[in-house]
Length: 506
Image: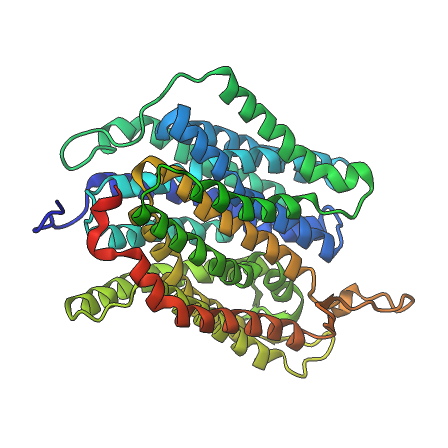
């Protein structure tokens, strides 16, 4: 039975995982802050091509946790998976350093090696760190929600410093700094895992290591080859077919079918997994809009935002530090708000919180749409409009992302915990790929228009996008409709979750 009196505070293992994840996120977000600018300024790629590559990369980063979750559950165990993932990501960031050093000549080919290593490495690292946070606590322990919020602050602490560090130097040194951050994360995990990754009863947490057979090894090698092939497909075959989109969206359809047809699932387990998949669908719209931060919003910050601050021109990548700083500042506030409402039996369920998140991201785009309405080519808006958008989006993120991680940890059957966490990240994969597709719709800016060539404006489902106001309105409509539908469904989803009986499915 669930404990009637819960311990105060959190286990030391939470703060150890906080530190490990913080440096890994420093690595990831440091690269993300400069990636699209690197592609357009150093590799000289077109905006649309760079946006599609950005979406493919970030999409696959969130897809490979399915592979990592499966191999962890079957063979590797959580700890060995994290070490393998850390090594591959550090290697990938070093390849990015070499790519930036090579420049437009051979840099593109080396970039594919770097992206492949980071994508596969993240698949092993990401779902296992998140899963181990939940394993520190007994079933039904309400501290899990606040634990994931604290853990989320670690993610954002790394994400705050990395754009300031990596964005303040030449691109190649920025990638090298990201590599060093990953090495720090890996070394700390290897040295202190046995000391801190234990339950409050003194038992080691994490799935045990099984014998790594030939099948698992071939799966790893095959996955590396598949990812590298997909990233290079367009270039190798001179084709416009986006195989990565088919792969990611196909997996988004296939995985629910595979998991829900498992005959070993009880009715309660199946209902809870259905809730996870429904909410994962809405997550796609949230992150599709939110992840413009690393794509179209970075291009907007670079080209049509007045970045002059007391005579100093702030690098465009610095804007990506606003979101994590806002999350670090506001996370304790949100924890207090949820705790205050819980004591008065007024705390919203997870689906309602996530609907609030979608509504807030729509509000952020309303703000920036007001700023750009009537904006001419070559004109710039005040940076404070963009700052406001990021703060509002951060509030939405706090309503959705840590709540989603906590919900998966609580609802997923223990024997499928890593796989379900990987499946949750699959929604992020679809969202990030979608974000790249949407970013490619940003209309041409003054410095990208050739007066001797007719301007071709992008279009979406038949609607031509000729200016930034129309571009940002697309996100308002998309997230606003999604938020409304999720509000309507939230009461039914809450019943399906059966929150009063959390141990039954464990």
